[in-house]
Image 1 (cartoon, one colour):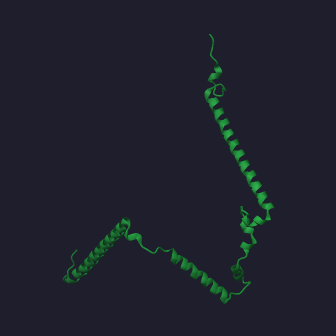
Image 2: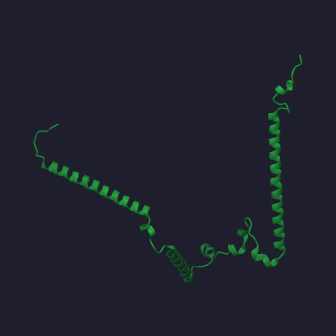
Image 3: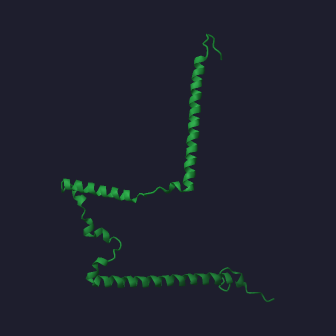
Length: 170
C-alpha cells in the first residue's frame, strides 16, 4: 500500500520537468540580458574616453562629433541672412535679389547636367512594349469615339429624315 509521491501530481512542484525547463529558460534569458548590459557599459566607457580625449585637445575642435541637438545651438548655423530680411531688420537690395537669381540659375544648371544625355528607352524591350500598348489603346479609343460620334450623327440624320405626321405613334 505504498502510495506514490503525490507532489508529482501538483503543477507547482519544482521536481517536475516542465517547471525545471521554465526555470532554466528564465535563467538563460537573464544571462543574455546581463551580457547585453555589460556590452553596453563597455561601449559607453569607450565613448566617454573618446569624448574626454577630444575635449582635452583643443586643436581637434573641427573633428568634434556632433551628438544629439548640438547642431541646433551652433551659432554659425543660426546666423541666417534671409531671416533678417524676413523680420524687416534689413531692406532688400538689388544685390540680394541678384544673388538669389544666381543661386536659382546654378540650381537649374545642376538639374540640366543631371539629366541623361542619351535616351536608352529605345533599347529597352519593356519600354517598347509599353509604347506599343499605349498606341493600341489610343487607336481603340479613337475608333470608339469615331463610332459614337458617327452614330450620333446618323441618329440626327434619321430624326431629320423621318417624315412628320400629325398622328402620334406610341
